[in-house]
Image (cartoon, rainbow, N blue to C red; front, side):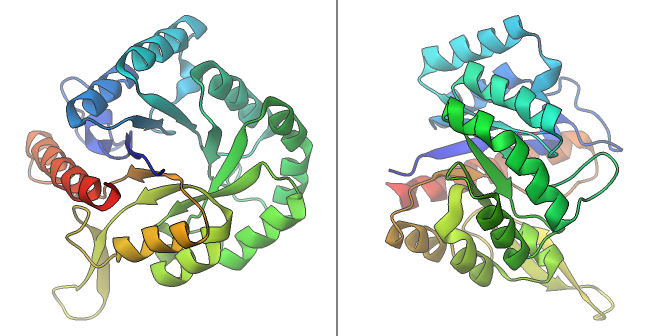
Length: 271
């Protein structure tokens, strides 16, 4: 059964966005767990904007204990495919009880080629297989659907799949309906991120902007139905592209409102 969850990218402004004003009290991992308790959801995904490798083992154990006491399942995320990084996050996933590590194909010196990615992942997947932990590669603006499928099939491990984001592939010139259709068979986790496409004020061009789930152009029912028809029941994680308002305080208010409306909508769809 699909479970609804929140992420450090649900409350991105509350965590902190580089280059913008910082909240008076930035959101921490325990604070994100508190948000899940308040929202009455059972899954928390901690992504790369709250880097878990910067926490001590004691701090990680505290987060695990705190989540367990609240009946909340933790999911682990990072950014990059360097072997040392992915093996570090494999250990973190084991500590926190995460069924997978979500990542984005990226390296400190840029984006690796398809073949470089395949070679790198083939080296680390035996450790994931031994641990019984999956690697969930998120579709992003750096790779097309065909490239991602080529990577997964060439790696040749039953433990590698897709973290399906409903908007990111616009950057690769691919629309959500096509992306979902093609990647659904490989999906281990879903990021529901709703959006609208608006003309810019000059009328010369468009902008893709975020909105609360259920209030935009994403056919969320279709996304969930396609996954169900394939026997896929991944956890559904809410992410938001909340715009910056006149101040960080106003932005945090809008982010909280969007999260509340989105979670209400998604609970109805997943009930």
